[in-house]
Image 1: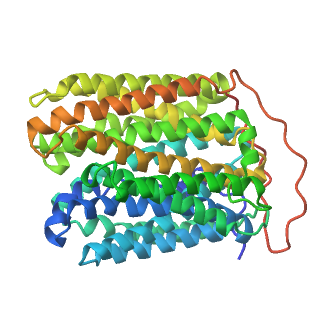
Image 2: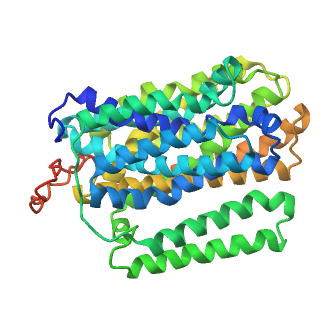
Length: 484
């Protein structure tokens, strides 16, 4: 049955953002549950790390294949499949009684999320009128950032009120409502029907897995041990082989030709370094409030609200301002704000630091995040023809997820290497250099953002696409009207 083709913009935003919020939330929602899960499941520290990494790695590995499947089978069709898989995997995670069950179910969750995230942005960009697209992308970016940032708060609240299983059970009613809403509101749009690049997917996925595994095991096994060096070297080699293959493949999962566009290339470099710096620091700072200052999981989540809520308000405004100011000015300002906030936090952290002393830095970091989310999504799609929207947004989501996974792994390695332990003094002494490392990476991201095209511009609409197959509704939206 064909969906309504002119649903209200607000309903389109709800239909595309609700599943994306659910998937974003699960990036960090488990963070506050880890101590409880360790006790109840008998999980060790390495298993706890893989509760996070299994989701992130599956997510990053399958984003681009999911985008390609969306082009081939229908974007709404694959989007719906992602919602269904994610919801079912949430049930499996909640029912898990052994660590390996959680790790496996979380990997399946990541697979479902991979079909949700890039297609969510593609569907919203193609379904709203061109004049409203910057605002819609701004709202989408705010919801995406809010989902990631509210993970620790929601996790803490649910655990304190119920149990760790409840953080996964709550996905079930959300997933059901989202599934029905998407079927009613969105059209099933297709892009170019091209073969799936199975070899490319395998090389990229195994390469990222090798790097993350080596970093996670580095401090415990020794950075010069075979157990660490082998996966690091193999991972790097596989990623090089991936790039070589993609340059030659007839239907690459990651078309390297997309990177000829300066706005796309720089926005993705910024997305990688941005996620690397900010999410590793968030992971450590949420734990600081609990381990060092003795706050409950819920209290820690509430205390970070000046940070986590700001993007919800700032990102839509940034989306509105992007066509007037350009994405470069907003992203540079946002990254400068975040780097300043992180250095500020690193200089302020102590065992007895008063919470009010952290509030201005938290608020500045949140404003900075809001200024980056929407302009980044806009810059990625700004000069892309509609047929490449799914691949472009999928590439950006992939690099941000990989950046976040590596950021958590590297900053945790810095923390552990500095003698970090779950005691007030040892935690602070090790958290300071780790947070400062995240701040330095964000400063690098700000410098990279200076390379975005300056000013405001609008790319002319491309020629009309070839006629769609009889059973397919094809999007006719023009590329996003923004510049750097």
